[in-house]
Length: 452
Image 1 (cartoon, one colour):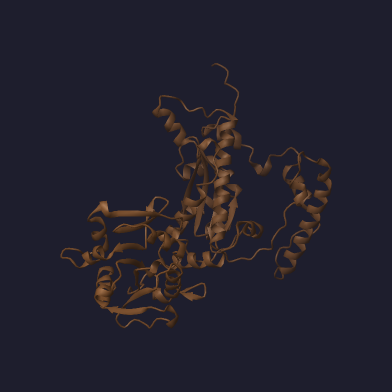
Image 2 (cartoon, one colour):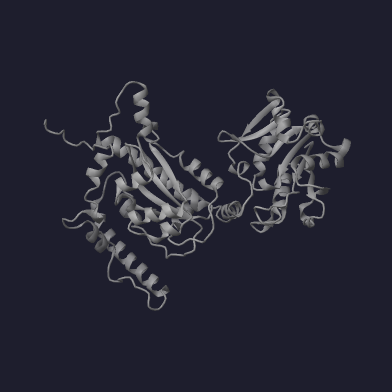
């Protein structure tokens, strides 16, 4: 492949607190990973630009090193151009080491597009690395050109995009949170089926942030879930402020992990956009039926489950908070939710600090029926579920520290369900949920009020 890759690795990495080229990513340094991906993409001519006096690079990087006096991108590019001179290939791939997680197939897709400037575009946003014709790259040395962005914007007609599905083209290694996200993704590159089988609610978190880029990527992925009639009736409110999370915790049964987690997510069934669309077309939104309430609630639930799975795929832990429905009006007011919106459930997300015992679900034969429902399986399923939960209680108790409150090992799954749902008392004390939801814009097929 007649391409010179210029790997920019001259920055100080102040926000990361380390030399970006040498940070560990899944057992190899970032620079080694970037160079390996370039080789896998068919690029053999690689130049690594380093700040003068920077630490040596691993020999396994297998690339030429060029030093420059500053970490500025433009100066790094000028140093690379001068070092190569006439041997610079007809095309250059500018590859900041910050984007070492970008895959080889993404690099191939960028280089497959023939244009003077090629940008990777993922889900509507452009990122890095960038392919440029040699003569375009040379413009970095023209008077008045200060950044590579100046070169790219000089002539939009010569810019093309390569559509890719690689979020790491948008997510650089700039902070410790970014590094945690990259390591988490590498450590958890397992099939979705296995992720689901491993799922556990996490209720203790390390004092580490979840970065904005990571959160945006996870939500952007989850929002593409299935949606009824394309209504997309879900919004997510992310809350990082400790004081606000403390107030949310007070409304959600004082669950301490809401205070502890770096971010709380409110998963909202949201008909506001639909109501506004109706207003635009001189109509009144019909939010008075149980069906539209169910559709919006299902939309939110599907997005929330997808978000949980996406978070776990990058090594994060999560816990869904049903207690967000304890005080729906107060929580909606705290989050400034509009009419026709309510929090279906909350979710804490963070880097897990606990290792809870995995709880087995109901037996498969209790859930999967062929052709028609087989009620003869119900009692055997309850027996199996009771035995499984009692065994789980024994395992949890065996791991507990002396003096800790122990779980009742005599109670099975059916005992717990009878406690939650049996008798006349409202489920979990949410006796006011329906009237409060009606006040918030979900009429739920409420009978018409008699005339005054």
